[in-house]
Amino acid sequence: MIDKLSFTDNELLLAFKRGDQTSFKLLYERYWQLLYVSACKVIKDEDEAKDIVQEVFISLLNNAGQLEIQGSIANYLYTAVRYKVFDAISKQKVRSDYADSMTGFVNSQSYTTDRMVLEKEINLEIEKEIQNLPQKMREVFELSRKSDLSHKEIAEILKISDKTVKKQISNAIKLLKPKFGGYYLLVVSVISNIF
Amino acid sequence: MKNTQPEDLFKKYTAGNCSEDEKALVEAWYLSQLKENTSRPSDVKIQKAKDEAWKVIMPVKTFRTSIYLWSAAAAVLTAVLALFFFQSVKTDESAHSKLANVSSKSAPILKGTLLEASKVENSLMKLPDGSTVILEKGTTLTLSPDFNKSKTREVVLQGKAFFDIYHDANRRFIIHSGNVKTTVLGTAFDVTARPGSRKVTVNVIRGRVKVEDNNTHWVTILPKNYQVEFVDTEVPRRIAVNAAKELAWKQADLEFTDVSLGDAQPRFEEQFGYKMDIGDTALKNTTFTYSMRKKEAMESFIKGMCAFIGASYTIDNKNKIISIQPLNQ
Image (cartoon, rainbow over all chains, first blue to last red; front, top):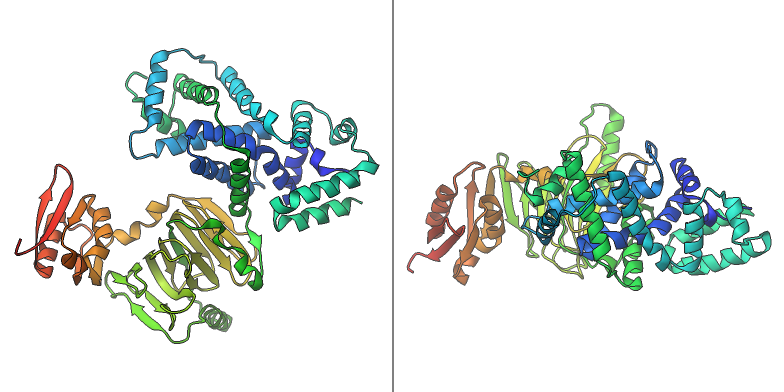
């Protein structure tokens, strides 16, 4: 009797590493917007930002088996996107606005050199986008990301009782249908296995 | 740090060559960008990008009937790709029957136009639809009999080829090689299919292509700088590559086989790093057959070619421009 939407990041990651693709999709649903919006803010080209986040997920999918993540999946994804953004900038052939921006930044000299602090601040900045997520996603996200609650506890907090679960799921399926395309059948079958 | 140009810091960072201070600087800049740029794409755009990216991220299993599902969604772009297809030459009978099986499945084109590259050098040719190809030495490319009339432009490749596809959104360009079918809606890419093992590899330089394995029914969309390997029934594995490097083979000796100067122009510009200015339309349409050596000096090549087509040339080394004019001007 478990609603997978309320799984924590770690639970999803573990299931994904064991080969569960629904968990991969749920991680994608959870993190796409944060990653994409943050990439857009730095790279300022929406197509390129899309390619970057896309690449990060392809490499996550490719490496499912041998993935060793130190820290959280969130941190892993934020860092991967950051590297890809720098990579994309460094591959630009013409001298870019980024170089000018960096030059201006070097000259301003107002930054901390504590990388732990920087990482924390970067993550906080990226997670500001959480407030723009759909409400349900935001609740699940916040509870599973910000606390060590198990999915059972989260389900309790969100009052996803046995009675309402069915309704929630049917709503979710309606919602997901156009988005998931072919995958919705998969989602339905996974969800129906729960009962 | 004083010696490092700011724009080089990004390269140093990704190469792992930054000092701790430099890392902090680059990360602090990243943070500053996140903070300063408060604008974000609209929710509709975010959702659209999310849906589009997912189609590329997750390879799908499909069946013949669903091939048409993948439509103009990716109203495609220029694509440059390399497809490697090796079939090992085995002596046992099962391998022979497998090979026969493969060719019967992969060759829906029974009678068509056969294009053959020279045995000793790569050949650049023009296809009837306006596309140009570079065939590696020894490669054959068969065009379907109704190549220029039917709804799809289909070819069967044995060997290795670079394609610059004439864009026609209504008539997809499809390359068959072994069990693998590569579909391009865009304009330029590169393909290999050689007698060898069952491993099939596809490279994309820019744009996107759809690649499907007729045996396993796996379909994947490849973005630029990715390579896919089809190995038996496993989920196709995509690997990030430097596709430009993978395509280096086409820099070898090249024979231009009855192509126009206009068609060969992008190839010259790529080879020499100079812009080519051909003012005269008639000259642009002049066709020629001529060989270019890999390490041939630019001027020696241009001189020889101009003598062949009856033209004169000037080279502006400062602005990197080669101008070609008819002899009488």
